[in-house]
Image 1 (tube, helix red, strand yellow):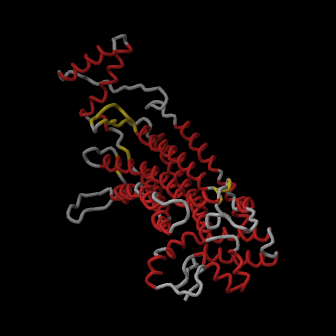
Image 2 (spheres, one colour):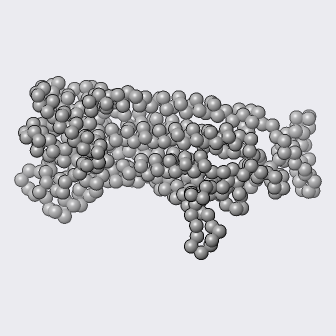
Image 3 (tube, rainbow, N blue to C red):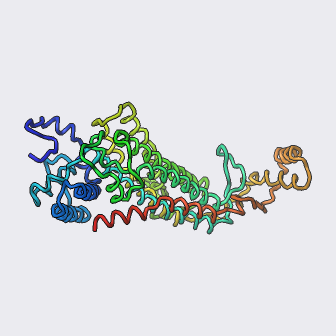
Amino acid sequence: MGQKLWEKNVEVNAEVEKFTVGKDREMDLYLAKYDVLGSMAHITMLESIGLLTPGELRSLLAELRNIYAVIEEGRFTIEEGVEDVHSQVELMLTRRLGDTGKKIHSGRSRNDQVLLDLKLFTRAKIQEIVSSLSHLFDTLITQSNRYRAVLLPGYTHLQIAMPSSFGLWFGAYAESLVDDLQLLQAAYKICNRNPLGSAAGYGSSFPLDRQLTTDLLGFGSMDYNVVYAQMGRGKMERTVAFALAGIAATLSKMAFDACLFNSQNFGFIKLPDEFTTGSSIMPHKKNPDVFELTRAKCNKLQALPTEITLISNNLPSGYFRDLQLIKEVFLPAFDELDECIRMVDRMASSLRVNEHILDDDKYAYLFSVEEVNRQVLAGVPFRDAYKQVGLAIEAGEFTPDKNICHTHAGSIGNLCNDCISALKQQVIDGFAFAAVNEAEKRLIG
């Protein structure tokens, strides 16, 4: 049998063990290197308060760095019969260092250990998402500037409304990502607080130096109240999930636009052949499957906050095993979203735009508001101008003037892409990833 940190003399029923462990061994592989990082900080603190000797600390740190390297190389496994990543790491240390390996758990519970692992994992994954989003943003701004003069119909109620442009369309999704990043930054700051030292949720009789582990791991602050630190399990994941869902919503909407605009009835854009698939019976088909799957995957991700809420919303304070199930939906979500971001980035950079959409007479009424505004600028009261243009349309006598001039901030002729780009950089700088990266680098050595 493998090692269980909590097991004493009574061996648990095999079927019960399978049910309670669930997918934990599989999910814990996501957390492995963060578990090692957390242990490095914890034992450094234990030595500082006299619970480890300097020699024991050196031996443990050396072995933990070896385990970290094994994880980075993709060779780390949780052995059969070993309950979780915490048990596996401690088992590996004990095999190499004997009783010294058993000392790393002093002043710690698996509760605050997994809380820490989740926070370290989440902040690392958020950094990856931010990097991918930043690249997608740059692609969208580049396309917005490239096609700033190409007009396309704007719609309300799926009825043609007023002239828009590809400059506006690409730029709109870029700016949407800035707001998504702002929400993600708020979630990141909630995540970037240290729960280590809260133990099972009620602290420890050891004189733990929680500020030291906070500094060693590069956290913005600690979760001060030990009960709240434990209550944060589920809350942090839910908060981050809402931010991920916001990004997913932006991507899903853009994917739907692209599918619509790519259809023959619209013909606004053309997707590269390598991003489309064919039909088994219709030789002419070029289906936008990548965008359709992006839409579906992102819609699924938008359910994540609800899933986490339903698992955790009726629990009182303290730890409950229910929280284990959150890992199964939360941990894989980052890679799923990142894959969608990268795919949308590739498609957005290579799709081709129809530069003559508004040559078609069916879009003539797009310019009705332009005519109303021209008359108003010439001194006609707005209500009179509106009525005159409306009567001309009803009589079939409206002739559009397609020369438009929109100059106010954020309009066709004044996209404000420089301002949007500056805002995006300001938000990204606010994450302050450098401090975290430097702290982790120092810890790994």
